[in-house]
Image 1 (cartoon, rainbow, N blue to C red):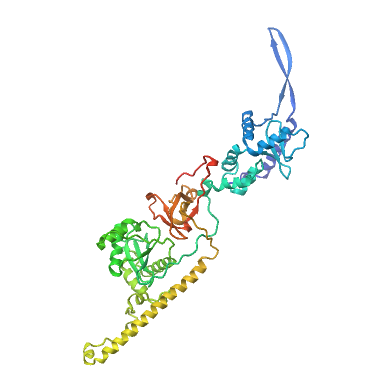
Image 2 (tube, helix red, strand yellow; image 1 turned 180 degrees about the horizontal axis):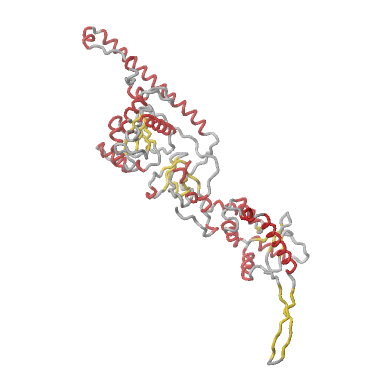
Length: 510
């Protein structure tokens, strides 16, 4: 933007200030002065009468309380248990020995309270307090939905009633607009609830997606399946448009047919794990539906590390057109499962199958095959092989125990780090909550239309089942398209407005 004063020069600026100063001085000299203006009036046909007219250059406006409003306050005073007693005592006292010296009764019929600073504050009867709090907190020219301290200071500068601090705090804490639009600034909630170490492979599996990838053989999504115990990983190319039925068929093909039905699935709040998923799995198994998903919404951080590592590996080997990543998944799965895992210290493939996969680098270390003719010629070799097999089985079981101990030890350190400085409150069945839309990625993209002004919390929802101290089943409509079991980290307690506060503004749905 151009600077007008710099372009017009300093002389123009000095002249402008001089004119403005002279104008203000002339106004100060004439304000509140009465000017005698002669006015000629013609009476009849020939007579003229000269009279003077007084003209004022200033005026004032008196602002007060309407008589009808004062009458409402008087009636409300009579209905208030405390202020009615104060007024009655003040009117009946004849010796001017007032038992309530902090109160003063004005000529227009309103009661005032003198605080320790000498300020006179209008006393608010019980029937009008909601109106005063609503105006002081909700009106845009007043507190404009400020927090407790600002709103209290605003209201208490003018009004007074007993225990007003407690009532104002209750009023603000139950404000629907504040609860859904203001960010919560408290520490993270919920302690780490480690998942019990499974007793066998693929008893508990973790599943996640790596979506929105460049198209490769008509795939744009990767389904990542990891066994909780052995850390054995399966990478399956798929699409972002896959539904529950097709998802169940993929799961049946890559997990159920090879390892059996898992007892528990750990995943995010994706819609692919709803009722139709298990219904299709049961149909493929030829069994009546008697399965329900054991859902654990506290995501395992190892899945995030897994996905990041897979993305880096793909990036290292993908072609310049970035359309061949789906051809790399099987080989990358072999590489991942043939390397020691940080959590257990063992190869995932070894913990699952009991041997180390032979790859290019390990081929020279593999023992030579034993000829069948040699075994038949020397029966003693059978005993040697049986003894070796026994030792291998015992060694494998010992190393599996070591892997479980390593996982348990890792959970101890994870719990210690995770629980530091976290809050431990819990919800109960019947509590009302709102969910954090940002945490769950529910906020729609509103670029150019003020996405920052969308409400941060959506609700309200009722907790119908407490699954653990950190996971809760919500009463949630199917239109939300998400699993109704959520972690406490995504929930905030909602305080409904008491009936005594009457009808109050509510946030409109995004």
